[in-house]
Image (cartoon, one colour):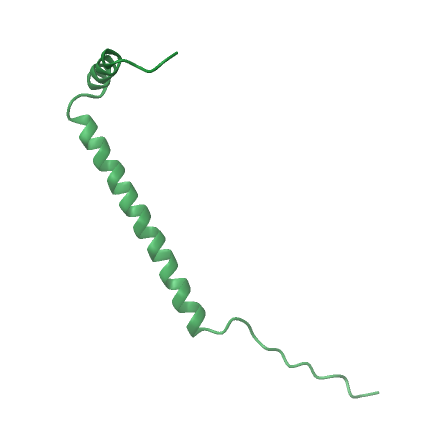
Length: 71
């Protein structure tokens, strides 16, 4: 099978440019970059409230149980 030649990559590049157009590829890459940035922002926002809530609020309630003394 071997590796692809320079002509192969040139033909693939021309076909991609014909399908997507010259301006569409940078626009697509910009959209991908915005998606990655918003994903990272969402991950950091999700982690921050959990760290502050676990240290300031109690984890559970304590219930005092009184035994029935009417025996």
